[in-house]
Length: 211
Ligand SMILES: [Zn+2]
Ligand SMILES: [Zn+2]
Image (cartoon, rainbow, N blue to C red; front, side, top):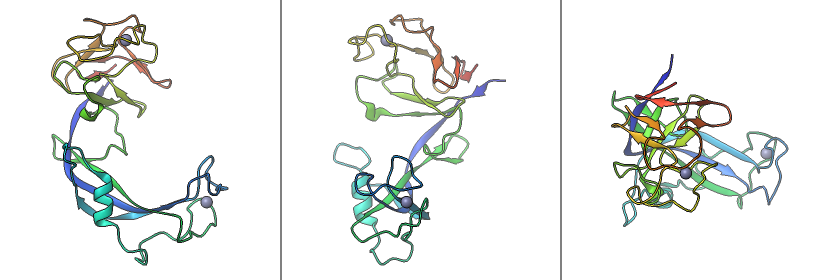
């Protein structure tokens, strides 16, 4: 049985937690390897997204507008991985996660990847766009995101990246998302056979299904 792909779409709503942390350069945490102290609250609510002039989601503005005062009791006080107590000079963050919605009306989060979940990610810009003018990303069966319109690690034409109609794609996609097939049938390089290899999972995407 393969994993079926399905589209999720952005909403203008973000679910947020309150997060305290330190950068590892400031103080090493005994519990978080290669990272500082860290703790997050439960979700504190849903917030309306704010866009930049160019139309991108502005997480800094969202945070500035909604950051609660530092004496708010919902802020975590202690590191989740050790006994460290946060100091006033440590980081204060409103950690926002965009709510995505599927065609079935169910809510999803890109931070909580479900195999087969597919979305447009046009912020990657002109260089990574597919035949429909969008940049398409999908979650592989092992939870690893795959930028289908991106560049393969083992691309044999590394300098030949650019707009879809002028340059090659390491993976060529056909069909309308999520019912797409990815192969080497088009302007492409010598990398692979149109399959995706995440290191943990290796297979093909055909007719909207991982096989
Ligand atoms: Zn710690
Ligand atoms: Zn290539």
